[in-house]
Image 1 (cartoon, rainbow, N blue to C red):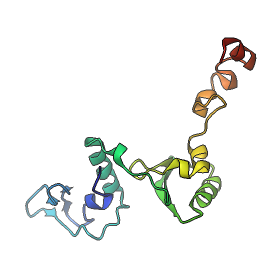
Image 2 (image 1 turned 135 degrees about the vertical axis):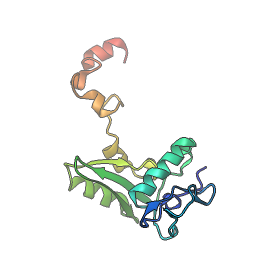
Image 3 (image 1 turned 180 degrees about the vertical axis):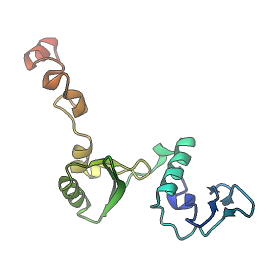
Image 4 (image 1 turned 45 degrees about the horizontal axis):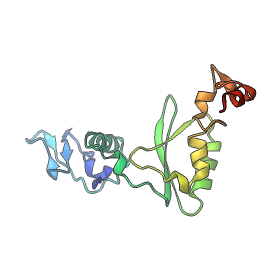
Length: 163
């Protein structure tokens, strides 16, 4: 199970050359005067560098599957061709707020943050929005071009095949 958070991987945002922090040795992997060993503790884990380093750590150690999915808040990554950021919705109305936020921004793309998974059974509306399915139970994008709705054939053809 992953015991670190993205905050543990923050480089400190100091001046000069930043060190490569390693929570396993609880410090900087590089030594010398040119490296900024900076204060790590103030980071809330939202800086891009900390998130990317945390993801690399989780992937290298095969820990993505051990992350506990949240039932109390929703974390989404948002992006288009010019920007990317993350939003977090908390409280009893988290799903309602997340869906409203997504609906108000139809030109943006939304995904779960891999290091902050959402417990999708607790948020069925979000699950339907992030992972839409066709009437066959497949990912909706498989139902689209080039085959369209009848990618398995027409209803009559499916019934004739026993599907």
